[in-house]
Amino acid sequence: TYGDWSSDVCSSDLIYNAVMAAAGGSREIEIWRDDVEANAARGRPAMHDLSALLSVSFDRGLPALILSAHYLLRVIRQFDVVRTDRLHAATAAALLGKRVELYPGRYFKNRAIYDFSLKSFPNVRFVDWN
Image 1 (cartoon, helix red, strand yellow):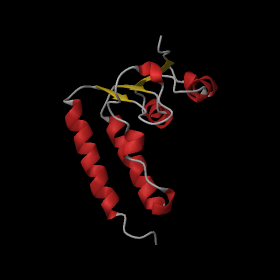
Image 2: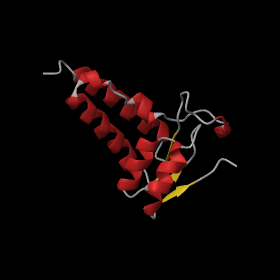
Image 3: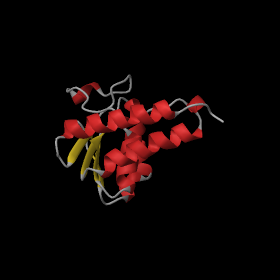
């Protein structure tokens, strides 16, 4: 047993509802890093850092980790276009068939993952900040 993770469900429901309300019916979402890996070239505040909002510590156990992934997919599924510098969001959106614009983070990781695998998806493109 991994203990009580019902609080994770309540928290995830609140986050999901807040994100969907903020979107206001838009079919596009921006998911930007708001941590040390954020690219300073972005020049605008983070709209939603879903990966951070829905993050769950590994010590919460497998059910909580699955729940976190479920809510990330549930949010992304509601949109047609995803603009992000978060690889988890970009990968999830690509697999769901969404149009994805992947932006660079502070260092090479996003470009490397794009070149290695995500560029094979016709719905994904890499966008530089300039």
